[in-house]
Image 1 (tube, rainbow, N blue to C red):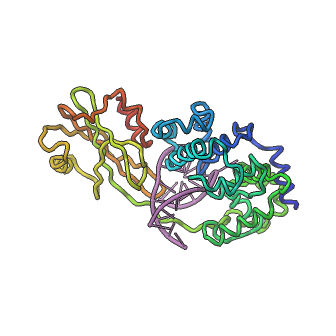
Image 2: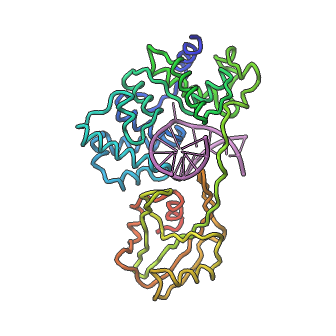
Length: 346
DNA sequence: AACTCGGGGCC
DNA sequence: GGCCCAGAGTT
């Protein structure tokens, strides 16, 4: 088909030189695909290099403590990717005897590997004819074929997967999959795509009907909820502070933070001081409370806007859980906390 | 089918 | 402010 041929030719002439394109080692391809989930190449690239340097093989990754893996992942977001990456590395090493899964069905069983990643690794490393469907593929196909089925409806998911599977180059699935994604990222961009020099514009329905800007169609997601976070930055006279590990289901699982008080609205100095007097750690001890930032820092996540204040709590001593200032940098923390730690200059 | 999970970059 | 990004897992 002309679409498939044109795309693979375009790719051979225009592909970017990226480190994971120099190898077919499934460990490296898997690693790159996990890092690139919901993440642009520019943002993921330094993390890929860092992981390859620190964990050159799946055995090195499997041996590492989870906390080290999260530390290296710090700042990239979607931390379940790091936790699942590590868990799957351990599974491959200790349950599969270090033999990497070598087909779509087996890859799909790994934690953190869904339809997209299983297809990507299977096609790139093992030449399996498994079409990838990511954000780029949705965009390219919806425009070229003029499809307005919402890409995030169950109907759309199935339809685009089937279409991609039909179009994939059966002789060279690896290059076709990478070609259509690269084309979406570089040429058929979400905003201001470069239609002027597009090799597919003659057959592109959206280009010819001038509906490029309307495609792909996507069902809107709910607006982000506003939350109020008050972080307590304890400072003791012997240069220690407190960090706690986040547990349970929510954001930043297994990362560390300063003790947090979530409130329904912004707190004044006096209101927070009152709250702290009943706070377990401070029940019978004197403390001094000083706000660090006057205006709340608004940290934006996909589904939450965190209106954040850091409060410095001066105390005489801390219990055995106190963390020396020079150790603070060793903990994996969310970007929001990391920025504070840098700014505060522990 | 809807919701949750990050952070950065663009308009 | 809204949208997007080499998506996956849970409810």
